[in-house]
Length: 396
Length: 57
Image 1 (cartoon, rainbow over the protein chains, first blue to last red):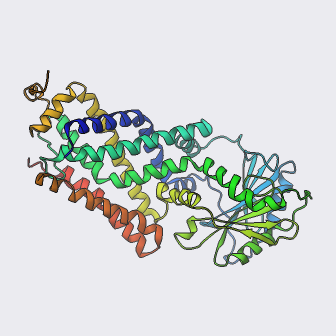
Image 2 (image 1 turned 90 degrees about the vertical axis):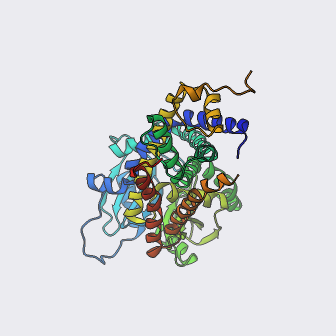
Image 3 (image 1 turned 45 degrees about the vertical axis):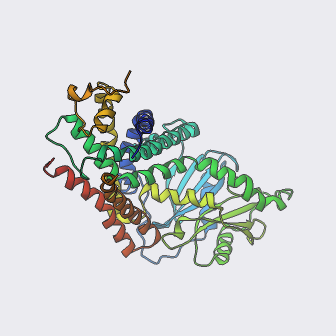
């Protein structure tokens, strides 16, 4: 049992961490709901390019043809990466920048992997789709990295609010059976009971989704750290090599990477000159094909003069934690039923947040000491003044 | 102190069930997905059951 003073401290922590983060958490829950179904919504709205309707088994063209097609379409831009989607075996995505090391992608093509037809062209100046806007609100509130890190800080407060909420759950439930909802009592008692029931029943899910969300906000710093340490270490022996400007076959580079890592498939191939590769190297990022291993990436450094594999290392633990935080936050790893559960649990989170605000607004009418005393006496939480104004000897 | 005992069994049980649900689909496919669906439905059902139940206190 907590002493009165430590209960007071925990309630103080719970109140303030919750109050500060609640508005942002409500926004994150509301924008997060449609984001769970991004894939389905984009397909339904026609915002997601579909591969051409060709007979199954139609041969894929060479990746070099794909790259050449994108380069011909945007002669002034430089290919930065080509990537794949495990759900779309017949599509290639090509990201290009104004320069090899440009931070922003200037054009993004979706091509059919068999015909090299450009199916979709996206540039940063395109009109934003509804899902783009919802995503940006959820990701950085249109404020770039500072916005992302700010939301991470709000997520951290939410995690503290959850932990302190679990700590103060016990004293409030001393006299009540699990799940009691005193419907016949004043609104405040009823909503306190619902807040406690919904919060404690979903506490672990909330904690995992909250904590993995916080980790995801650190993606840019985490990748930055990896690039400046491990990746820099892999490419260091070659940093003084002269740039030829000519790169060997991307198709052969991918084939060499897959031969080096049997049983794995390409996630994306980073072209020389950007943050995910070396100045003179391709880096192929491959993933496993099992549920767990498909979430992890392994970088394979490839020589751009002959498409041979030079080096490959496992990602460090902190990068693996980041990669595994993605599915645990998005809920996209167990089919549609898991997504529906994610949505239901998000709705529960909205009620927990909303009822918390309601309780705070109500509670401000009753001094904290009086509420604590009511707990000590075993009286039920109530708005009745007879309990509120009981005085104890230690009061001066 | 004996009063404290009954506060925690259900929350701890729900926490364990949720953990199993979150991990299962991540570690395997097929039956493991089904384990996730069933276990993560438990907290949702618990909430529906108790919040719709007639108050007895």
